[in-house]
Length: 376
RNA sequence: GGGGGAAUUCCCGAGUGGCCAAAGGGGACAGACUGUAAAUCUGCUAGCUAUGCUUUCGGUGGUUCGAAUCCACCUUCCCCCA
Image (tube, chains in turn orange, red):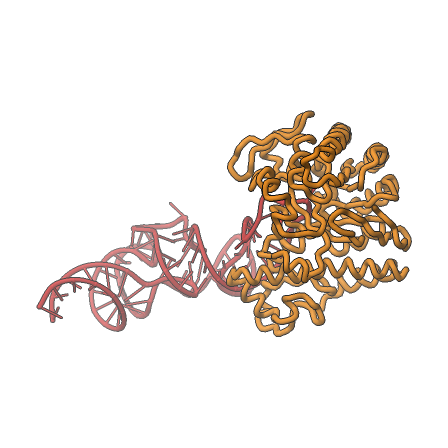
């Protein structure tokens, strides 16, 4: 299922086979929380910009339209008309991001819906059931994404609960996959490592969950306020304690520089809202760093966002025009910026894969990081 | 021709004697955003030799210790009646 093709230092070039196709890693998963990438991005667009995996969210789809409706429509793949792999996040991040709207108990989490305030209960079993209804390719374990900073005492208690929840997730997922009427009987389950910024807690937890023989392992709870140095240190400590023959996923990360560094520490999967959200907010990525198209200096800039870029935005449109659209709040402006950013991320990953294959990842990383800081 | 109303800082618009360089929008300018409660949020928007000073509320003159606010005249615009 997971096959390492080439290693270059700790960086891995691998293939991950799923029922919805083979994922070439390292990979960036394009975030479409509510079964759509914000910014009016269609399935056809995703095919054009090189998307391999789309990520959607258990909590959001449970709230709206409801996972039973998605199931009735034949599962997320049919519903979205996307036949490549889909990873669903478990709702664990909403335990973090909806902190004001939820209460954590051993059995699970009580939420108030951010849409209408309705009471929602989600525990490991519920999360697995919802994800089974969604029939994603990869389900994520239901965890608590711990805020930063948190006390050691809290982190240890939370991590132990996340482990107990993980065991329950695995049991429930096996049961669901064996049901005769399940849509995707090959649904995979990734566990999630937590431990805040406490490296010993991280390593201990990684060792524990590695015993469970899951389909993949994620490092969660990073990029939530700690420094980059802390994040890289945690990866240095944690990734070696996760199974080498399973994919590693760094959740929610990150900037191009974060990804370059994390790949160098053995990470295969990434996802982040940056390319889509920043695109909607007028920030676009180039090999020389990020541009803010709202800035006055692009008012009459006839150049594409990036010279030579093959994305749908750069092939036809100028910075000046996209800036105008963004300022005029025309949806096309956001759409073009998001398409560019996702294309940039997907192609950055392609370059990363090639560099590993050609055994030159270290120099590629240094050169790319250097370029990113240079500006134009 | 007669009667009434209005002119405010880039725009709209509040303010009708001191607490006013002037509310609130908008626009402009800049910043933030890392498993998306995010097409969102924040800051800023007269000038300067800056805990103060100068210019600014259609124009000119006046009343007052003090005027965007009161008075006179002028200019422009709007509405109603002929």
